Image (tube, rainbow over the protein chains, first blue to last red):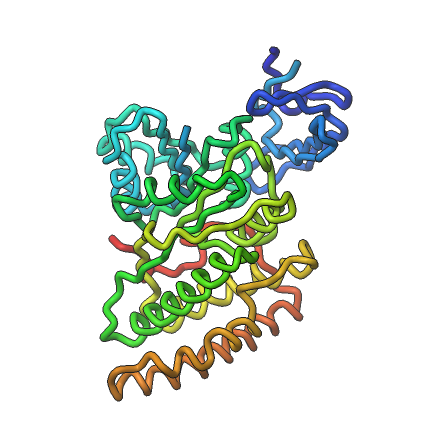
Length: 65
Length: 300
């Protein structure tokens, strides 16, 4: 397991949330928002095909595989 | 594992009480997380709460739904017997709340369990009376829906969900409606745990009452766009259907009869104002209850 900043996560990589592996299908970085940071919106797909939206500040650590 | 998430907005005194009720339980598989956008609140809470099961999570300033989404993902688990209990810092629960909630999850088909809001306000004042009547009406409706195993919306003051079922929910609407809906769509039922009480201080001025109710109505009306196929329990027409006659049967004194008539006018006005705002594109925005400046709902 590797910890990556949200902004470094790429499409096609796998993220781990609560022990479940999810495949990253979309990554979008927003402009600087009201909190003075950029936000990263990651859409990841579960094995069941269900999509999950993960929104984090750009430097937020996320678990990837 | 039970994760209690308390969303608060710079109300440390009442948040301490909210946390301490949960920590009265000695169970080791319980964690109580307070998420609050004010860093100074952490210091105050840590001085008062020494329990290692207590966690403070600084909110990133993006609103309550955002914070809940983040923690639902951070504390996610594949074990569907693990639970999230979601509540607020400006309310507190009864000592038996966790046990009652857990008991309600005894049926594996139950995905969401909602508690019972109880007003701490005096029934001898107009807004207190309105709150008592509203909570009685909601209690009656929830009992009925729960018994029939039909869909109904939970109480944002206290509700619980199984882990491992959903990892996110839309930000632009009320979490107490959209989360039960997402569980329902996955085939889970919703249960009303009337023994799990949550004590709430309600608005005591017209300005605060109107601000709180308009915000609620707008949040729920957004559901029409986000979840158009969702069966609505908190809506104008359901209020008329479930409440119009029920409210008339509540007064016990002449003063309460007068307040009841005022309540009809007030409810009509608030729906008029909320729908007018929605038409002029003043939409619901995710935020914290305290930001709506409903100062009289604070227990401090």
